[in-house]
Length: 99
Image (cartoon, rainbow, N blue to C red; front, side, top):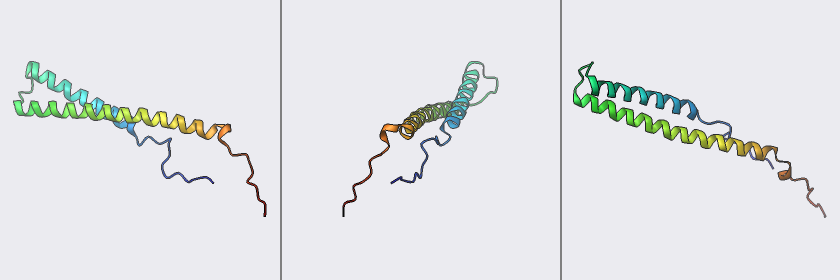
């Protein structure tokens, strides 16, 4: 009996996209913080600088976590593909029907 899959193993919930998005956003915020910390071209207050640094750390952390999930979904997809194509797992025996 074949079970219906509600969730596909080949779907990664867009974690690859989100990891890139969060990592790029975090690096941009970190760059803004470092430039402001070094040269003060924007003249932002210390509180705003701290907020920018906090969001940079959060974005980089979320990017790394979503990258980890993306890698795990990729491995899960490979395992699911191997199971689907493995001939040794197919049940070829007919059930005995003795009445």
